[in-house]
Image (cartoon, rainbow, N blue to C red; front, top):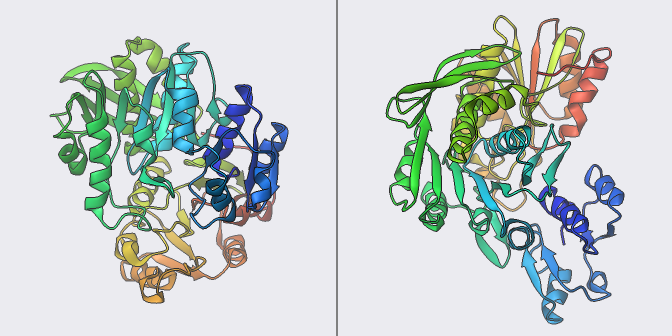
Length: 464
């Protein structure tokens, strides 16, 4: 149920590859997930209905998009059909016999887990994985192998309507990376204290012989890790970290940096992803692979070969001398770090940020002030009006107009746009050779990336 979600759809494909007969239902059926499921030979019913439970399935996997009052969910309970959540199913069928490597944190989960899975493959370990973004090296966001490792992106979002705990509690972590802890998901968490409680449960659930690889640059991560019973391995920028990144150098093609372990030089590394935050993501992976016993030379070579992740600082193309980049950033911290990284990579270029507030949190007033200082590295900021949240009062909703006013008060050139078409028209008239346009949204944004490239007069494929 909810089969067209990124994670649930991937799980359906994994179950099919494992030999199960799989069907599904969803309210929103459209590419690319509809095409993927069709290619897998998985029948999908449009809409939710008790009729979708005929013939009676042996097990139903309930995605977290499903609410308690859903007619199919009601029929599921009435007929006493066995059911589990998506994280429970993933754990039971694919993780339980593996060494579970879980990447958790407010930021960087998809990039870090993609790095970990890609490097494991590059050095011959052939991992299974489930990740929230499409990994370029694999061409998909999941993998099922006979290898001993399973890499899971550990989401703190709730599991299902019948289990409001975070997904990552189901993933049997043997080694966990904890990248950061900030307030997010305002639709399910009341405040930062509630967030900390969830991550504290992850720390408490770690086995005594496990390892928690934690970013020491984040004070809340340090706080939560105080209660850990397992071994804590710290990483970050400061001298008190077990693993430290130094001598960072950024260009459009790659980021290079030095790594120290326990104060002693460990090696030199290169990564296609720009920015300090991505160097830290790579450092966490380097630490995990060292714990697992892989040779540092193999890890360095694998990192240099890493092809990136779809929608994470992904260069979609160049047209009329304008570089168009797609990025998933939506939280104020992610916006700030992404723009700082791109500004460092493209020195001397105008950096135009196009922002669509789309998540449940970004469309709430909770981040209104934080966004005002998140765009400082940009030359110009274009903000689209989001679709309003209908379940909260108007006075609690985010205002794109207010953000534009706040940015202008900081001396930034900023513009408000009510539609994607208005944004495209403006860029067609204002973008000039050498500009870097980064489009930030966690959704499809009306295919604005390709439409902009087409509008500017054809595309030239580009990649980092």
